[in-house]
Length: 235
Image (tube, rainbow, N blue to C red; front, side, top):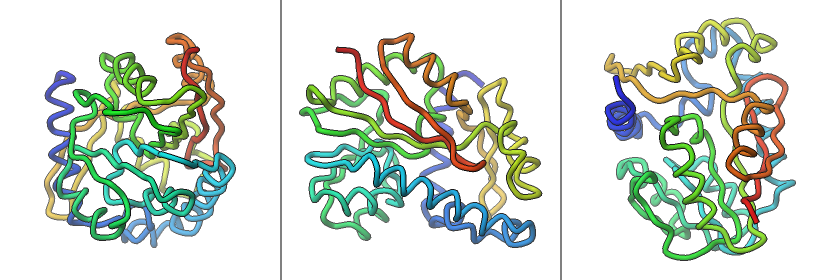
């Protein structure tokens, strides 16, 4: 499946998954309970929140692919000016109901042009869904969205090969996504299966690839499940 079809199916998946809430993030799926993943996942999630606290977004903040609002809530703790952009109206509806104080924009991030510049841009679990062919263009858009001195904060899943230190069962579950191909498979509770873009990044690789397009990044890992960090655009 080519990148264009993958992006289309990826959006269809996230539109359909909005009805299932945030079970994946909260660790409420049955297999999580069986493997003991829930507690370990939540411990690493706390490390993500701690890193966002360190980053301390302020002023006018843009959230890319905000989805149902797991991290929108965290951003609103720091500032009352949060603009959330997402292509899935169903996810935005959930987010809007939870966080009426934010501003919401339904748009495809691969076609969207920022209407103004922001003090910070944040994204959670999104960069792994950016196809290789759209990588440079996406980051050029992010640079245009930032005011001089602006920064980016991001987090995402760790590479499956680096997650072997995690609880039993996790590595086997995510190994269904092929890091070499950049394609992942996702299944909903009703049995529907979707192919999505899933490009797992290691910290050094992400720093290197961003440096190649002029960005300076500092990326770290939690104990096993996530990567996180910040980046600044070319001067």
